[in-house]
Image (cartoon, rainbow, N blue to C red; front, side, top):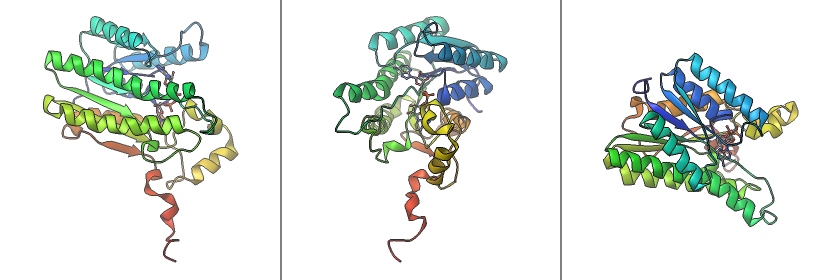
Length: 269
Ligand code: NAI
């Protein structure tokens, strides 16, 4: 895709789900991909396997890869991750803020610590990564692109997931604010807003046929999205095809943000 070959990309939460597909997609398009992962490989066998799988895929497609462990909610980890990437590769062109978590609970029972954990990972983590990337681009007087992997829940309320919807609402504002602040410095900031996507974060329904039918019945296009579809939209927004696009969220959601209940004109019948 135009502009992507040989670019250096950092994907947070890049060892599974949407992040993994983004890592592979950028490698397919000729970029070098730094994969941030969260857990210690020795402690989390499944994550380690996903990382190795991802690494093999990236190498098959010809891109160089770099594996960077970091908890994006910790400033010292984010600094170490950026310091290592810049020392190893000398530059960063695209930052993909993909790492994210959600914690389900009735809002009256959710602990403040749980609420803060979600915000610290999804929003503060994304901000700390964005800040490091922007500081580098300003110092070097280089262009750069940030893509925030947000959610339809940046605009659609999500009862029992208040930390998550607040975190993604904040991400929407961060996307527009940073885009406006740095538009004159050739730094573009956009987001994708995935709808229900088949990834491990949705393990509660993806492998349960009955629950999956229920989930997909709410989606106008009648099916969940794939991580690859999210990756294609992310690549497009980074590429030179989107050179004049900044501050936008591209919803990739099969119509979920179109108020599906209004398929029938019930309010006027
Ligand atoms: P996932 O659970 O496979 O991916 C999340 C990734 O973030 C994992 O690799 C995890 O290790 C990483 N992560 C979690 N906490 C971290 C931390 N403190 N530091 C570094 N990495 C951390 O799930 P999925 O679906 O691929 O999620 C990716 C992004 O997409 C998230 O931001 C999520 O909110 C967003 N999203 C997903 C949707 C879906 O239906 N799957 C819908 C809308 C948005």
